[in-house]
Image (cartoon, rainbow over all chains, first blue to last red; front, side, top):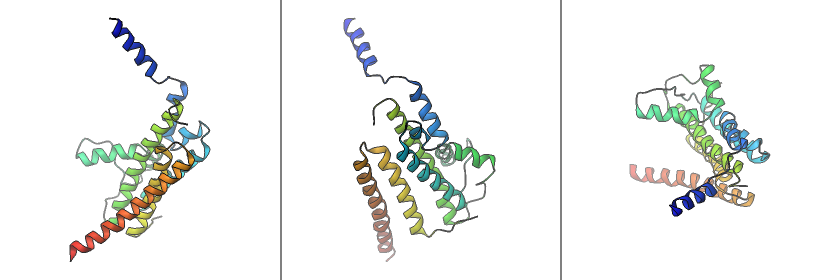
Amino acid sequence: MANSSGGKARLADAAPPVSMMSVVAPAVGWLIPGAGHLIQKRWVRGLLLLVSIGTLFVLGLMMQGHIYKPNGGDILDMLGFVGDVGAGGFYIVTLAMDWGQGAIAFAIADYGTKFMIVAGLLNFIAVADAYHIAIGKKQ
Amino acid sequence: MTVQLTHFSAAFVFALFASIVFGITHRESARDMVRYGLYCFAMFLGGVIVAGWAMWLLRR
């Protein structure tokens, strides 16, 4: 019994503090890549993330890459959607403008598709980084 | 507006931006970020070149 309550106390000590920033920074960082760092005054990191992820995504579109919509079909299509949706606002705008709907007809278009998926996946990493900064795990 | 990149330039651009994000997110200090980013960039491009030569050899 005493061990159990002691274990709970240790767990509570180990749990990261929940603050407004630890919720807002990842959300904003997902919507606008790098914004999770920018609102925590990590200006250079935030701008570099915005430029890097944004350029990869836009280049992917300009290479006539394909954007995946929510689907329940082929497993690779579903994974493509998971990657794409990580780009947040870029993905939403692209869907709203009906861009990236062409068939993948040549190698460069396939590269473009991968660029956009990777941009989304990189943004997931940036979101996790923004969260770690918000809870004080990283400077 | 469309962009036509060569295979190598596409790999170069990919390596550059992925390395920047990896450097920023995987290390703590600015110096370590730059070093890790450069390491990732070298590994990406080195991997491309090694894979290219490996495929060239396999075709022989």
